[in-house]
Length: 410
Image 1 (cartoon, rainbow, N blue to C red):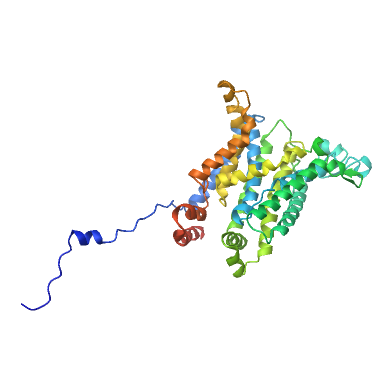
Image 2: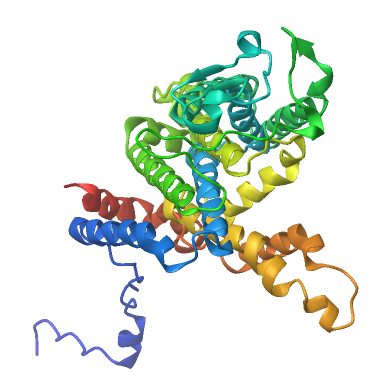
């Protein structure tokens, strides 16, 4: 019998040779813009009414105010480290410059100013009658932004041709230089005044005096909280706008591949300097606020360990992740100011050990970071790009970015 033979039916061997169906990876759902707006409004309202549930001068409001100030600093450092990928180990310098700006223009430090009668601008209450220089807090904040932005660009200039560990060394040196000047500045005089007051510090510092409001006091902490909360909202708005802007994409391009970014026309010098200057400005704002809130500007506040403390907030929350930085700053702030000294400090004594747990604070932070690097290196709330690189694979990056871009399109 002639003709074509019928094809054999596929047997078990043929079925097993078929390629397995592609695995689908679970992805977090992307919230709509309306859902994101609703969550943002709920968070703002909840944060604004939170002080009414606690004592006006209690420890919780005090710790929460410090946490909010640290969030502003962490968001500023995240621009440098998270967005632009420039390691900065001297961020405490910008805190110092902002705080000293508050001390110079809001205290008795220049007691001989204007022939001993003082110089006053838009201040009320006791500050309007004291010698020295006393400017309105909003004016001092603007001066702090200018001073720290210039300082940030100055520190950025030597790092333009450096990468990796070399950038860390330069920024560390800058932070140590500012710290040494703060300690020994009482021996540097000019124009009839000292550069700093050394470890004696500048105290008292003027309280915040906003238009149409009474000057703040040390016993009523709710106004301090609300000012810090407003600073956080402004910092978040600026961070989100910068991340999605042309400049933010240039920072990310330099972070991912500097050679490719420059070859595609990204201006390296301008982009890096703007990252340093913008991040430093947030440090200056928070430094001016803390100078007034703590009522003192002391050289011992500006230690290298503080730079590591702020950097740990970013690593804990997630490099480049705005909400992750907020969570990391709140977590480490309350661990440092509430959990260790008030809750866990007596634990060693209960088991027969003679030391305070506060002496091991930075050891505890280091242990937390090691655990994070092992269990979740991308952070608590990671940036989507970094999460893909560390856990899902680089091949999924383009597909995932399309979904992220579509979610941002109104």
